Picture 1 (tube, rainbow, N blue to C red):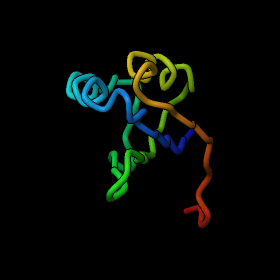
Picture 2: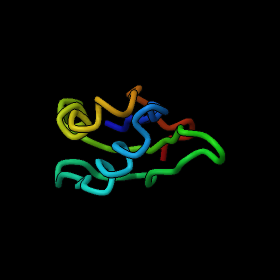
Picture 3: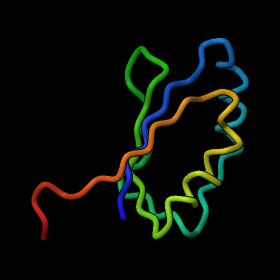
Length: 81
């Protein structure tokens, strides 16, 4: 299933968040459909990922939770193949 991952870096922890993101490694179980994009002039960003189990996203993002707020939403294509 595909998921929209939205994040908002906590301003107080911007430096720590940047360091944590540098160490980020995408697990094999997660297929990136749309690579991470940051919003211009903000601390927000998005990505679309495909996984069989949403727990993979939870496990992957958990090291960043002290510095970044996440919203994960299941999505479906507007125009299926």
